[in-house]
Each structure stands twice: as structure tokens, then as C-alpha cells.
Length: 224
Image (tube, rainbow, N blue to C red):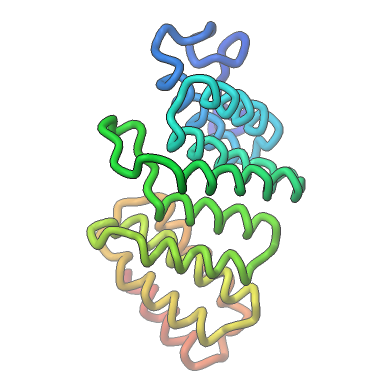
């Protein structure tokens, strides 16, 4: 693990990507800060991530379209959920969904796009962080139905998380069926996250290793 991974994303003075407020448009600045916040959260830096996400959401509220505001609010929901603040997480999630439902779903700016599948995916991750696995599974399923056929990587990652949610509810057979769908999409994916999902599959199924279907699935995964 390198120094950047240990200490989190390297933030210049004042927490801005350039060491001062970006000379680019506020909209571009919002997207950049939201991306940095997401990176920080994924490597476990919850408090810096929350601060950055709040900053992005505040800037989006003043300068960005409803879709971009929805984008930042959904990340804010996840950041609050990871901080164990259920009321604020659900409130931000509500704002994200309301903004998305009233937004132009065909924006001309490609950086102003926030697909419905992505919103449901973020909703599911938030609910997972809040340990509401039943609702999370429904949201993952909704996200999968909304995915474009060519979005194989996104579908694989979402499918893996759905399988984890199902197993967290004690639904082993259902989870195995979903893991099989993940293995169908897995070959050929050059994705660190997909590899991590495969590792997770092996780990969470290990306690059920005597189950015949688990043994078959593990054997299949070993060939990939």
C-alpha cells in the first residue's frame, strides 16, 4: 500500500483540487470535488469524504442542474450512511430522488448526465450501509433492470452486490443464482473492482463450502 492509499487523496491547501478554487466553471468544480469525495470514501476516509461531499452539494445547489444536484445528493446520502447518520442519509437520498424525477433526462452536456440505473445503484449502496439489506436488494434489482445491455462492467458489479445483499438476508439459494450471473459477465473484464467482487464471493461463500452448489460455483470461479 503506497503513501497515498494510507493517508487518502492528496488534498492541496484549502481542500481544493488546485490549491485554490478552480478557475473552471462551478459545474466542473462540483463534479471534480464529488469524484474526490467518492475516492476518499472508498478507501475509508469518511470524515474528509463527508466534508468534500457537503461542499460539492452546496456548490451544485447554487450553480448546477437538477441532475448534477441529484448526483451530489446521492453521494451525500452514502457519506452520511457510512457515518452512521441514518436520518441525514435518508433525507439526502430523498432529495436526490426528487431532483432526479423532475430533471431533464436527456441533457445536452455529457457531464450533466446521471442515469436512472446509477441513481438506484447509489440508493442500494446507501441502504446497504444502513444495513437495510432487503430494501438494498430491491434497489440493486431495479438498477440492473435499467442498465443498458452493453454496460457489462456496471452490470457485473451491481450483480455481485445484489448477491451479497441476498446472502446477508440468509437467502443462500437466491444468492447463488445471482453469483452465477456475475460469473457470466466476469470473463474479459479488466476491472480491479470486478476482481475484488470475485474475491468477496469466495470469502462470503466459504462458510457454505460443503453445499454442493457452492462447491460447483467455487470450482467454476477458480477457472476464471
